[in-house]
Structure formats: structure tokens, C-alpha cells
Length: 274
Length: 117
Image (cartoon, rainbow over all chains, first blue to last red):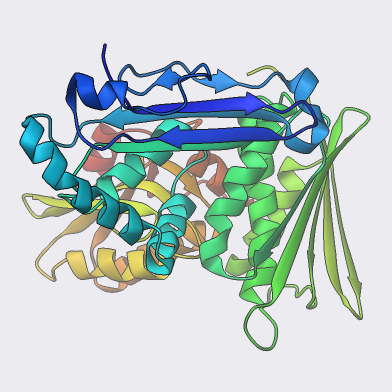
């Protein structure tokens, strides 16, 4: 397969990873030959490349296992050589457009709604692209996968729209610790309920934050959900089901309320399997 | 589409069938409640809410189901929820410590029978 577009990812050996992506304007053999950086081993976008993964052993705890996956699909495949030259301007303006603040915001919005799966991220971005950008579209998605025994700390705004992302991050972390499917679903639900309580009683002005930490201690997950407000026992019995859910799925649930905020601590031993 | 959830609504005779997929949580439960209540005309005899394909539902979603049951009961319309055992939302209902509700069904056939079709 002849193709000029490429991507590459290389471990730098000190816990950092270098990522490159190249998109050659135009099509055909000439464009492929004009592709830069012939010296580095590159992964052609023309073929759907297998995911690249840094070895966790070498990439140290700071990065964890990185997974990169590329998807490149021609948005229009029938272009003549002359047309190629004229689309060059279009390509540059397209690239410039996508680098504007507005473009970045839209990208962040898309990513926020996507599960942490490279394939889904690429498809999500691709479906959001304006038609007629003028050239092939190359997207490189890099997912930072949590490592076993790695501790996690997530800070999110105390807002209902933040809860879905929190669930995905906790779910991915639990999977890395070897939690089974039911264990993940149960613990994610409990964390969500604790976070939701804080969100529902969002305190004072906007932009209050929630902090979630997760760690493994002697085969058990220990997750804390902290806010800057006060834990409220729900007055309406029906709204109080969150507390029941937490106690039902976790081995231990403690709620500490202090003058500077509340911390819910959730502990459950993992069995794995499933 | 209601935030994290995709809603499909169709009619089968006098029954409104609403299929909700995706996730239901605090961010979209109010919008979803409004959408579902609005989909059931006064002439309809009942609502079947198919949650078989729902991946996640929190306690605010469980609360939504009770609210829908109450609202439809006031309008003398029947209500049935389809949620097979072992689906995460079913577990959320069971874990929230309430007795099994008569509007909760494991499959479509049982729900439709309860709605009198």
C-alpha cells in the first residue's frame, strides 16, 4: 500500500513518550514519496495499524501503559494530480481552522462524551468533522491506561455533567486492578452515588470541586470522595437510596464530616473473576 | 436523545413503548422524565419502558421510575418496566433496598401482559 500519511510513537526511556503524526497533502505516489522523516520507522496510516503499546515495565509509573491507535480514512479518494496542488491551500486552512481555540473546545467536548476507547474517540471526532476539509483525515488517539497498583486522584467540578466521566475513569482504574465486571459495576455505582450526593448539595458559588482518590490496600480498593461542603442526610426517603446502595455494595462505608468538608470512604475487597 | 441516553418512542395500539439506551443519571433524569411523560397521550392506556439496553442507572434514575409510576397512576394509566435480571440498572433498583415492584418485569412478554395487550 502506498501512502504518505504516518504516525509514530517512541518511548524516550525516561518515562516520556514522543508522538508524531504526519499528513501529506495530496494523493498518489508522488505525495507518498514526498512524505518527510524517512529515517524513523513509521507506521503507515494507509493500513489500519495494530495498536502500539509501550511496555509498562519500561515506561515507569508516571506514564503507565500507553496505547496508541490510528485510524485514517480518505474522506474523498478520487482526486487528480492537478487537483492535489489546488487543495494544498485548503488543507492548510483546514489545519489552521482546527487549531483555533474554538476547535480545541469542540474537540474537548467530543472527548468528554466518549468512553476511553481509542477507536471510539477516533470515530467520534471523525463524525464531528466538517465535511470538505480538503484532504484525508488522520487522527491519532492516545489513551493513558491506568496500571495495577497505581493510585488515582481525580478532581472534577461538582456538576451533574461531570459524573459520567468520573464513572469511566473509576471503571478503567478498577479494570487495571483486576476487578471483575460485577465488581466494577458495583463500585462505580457506589462512587457515583457518593459523588452525586456532593453534587446535589453543591455548595455556594459555582465551580466547587470534588476530589476522588483510589488505591489498593491489602487486596481491597479504598476510594475516597471528598467535597468542600457538608454531607447531608437526604430528607426524602426516596432520594436517600444512594446511601443504601453504597452500604449494600461496599464492605465498609464511612462518612466524615468536618468544618472544611466531607469525605466518604468506600472499601471493598476484590475477588477478581468475572 | 436526552444527554447520555437515546430514547425511541413508538406506539402499539393504545400502549406507548419507550426504549431507553445508554445511561440515566442526575444529568439527564429530569429531561428524560419530561420527555417520557410528554410521550404518553391522555388516550393511551399505558407506558412500557424498555430498559433492557440501558448500561447504567443511578438512584436518581430509580427515583424517576417511582415518579413515573405515580404520575401515570394519577392519570389512570398503566406502567411496566422491562429490565432483565443481572442488568446493572436492575441491580441499582434491588440494591437501593426497596421491595420488588409490581411494575418491574424481566421480559417484554410479561410487561405487555401486565399492560393488558
